[in-house]
Image 1 (tube, rainbow, N blue to C red):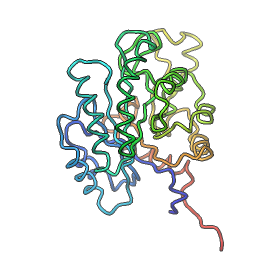
Image 2: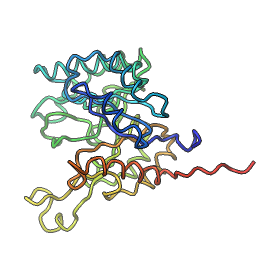
Image 3: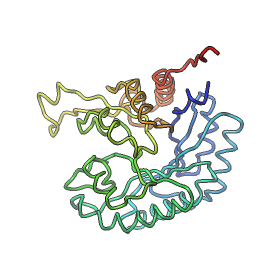
Length: 300
């Protein structure tokens, strides 16, 4: 396939917290994934990231697979022990991104727990102004996933970058060119936001994209609303949800996005457990088709 056709790569996330990232890559690399996002949950567990990066690249070997982004998910704004490990993990990922071949570190902003979103902004500015400078010095971008983690404007734990109104505020606090978003349509559908107009407005800030979707049960909303006992939305693996990924990828291309879409698994209510990799490989092939696989060269 030509470089132009593969300007948006389709890959998946790889769990890395327990030291298993390289082996996880080796286990699934031959399924056809074109990129991987190794990610840590709250802590790197003191791993030597330079050595881990080498092992991950060795696991890829000669395959045409990239690692553009590392994930560091936790709450770096608070000061409990795991929060401090998360903050240190951000620093370590930034410092060692080049060992993976990565140019972006993604995660949550963190949040002052159980306070209105705006109460987190001073601490956010303090922490991420320094991290953005540290990243810029190494040619690395910072990207915030747009996941609410069950929080909202009034209260929450993990993240303030889950709503376009909050994006306006955090980019005002850190107007640095290397601070942006790790975007996915799933979290917007959970908010009942149409993802496509959002791409047109915000794609200049998309540094990485997650392949995750959602199914909205409108009949539940009409009868029970969104705060009742009946679940009104399910997070889904791409190919099983509501988004038209042909349109999503087309809008990304029109906006000039040329990065990876890495599938975020482990959320689908059906394709999970023994069906996890079945769902992920279906999503891989589905997203490749939506991208327009089967490249045909123009005649000379």
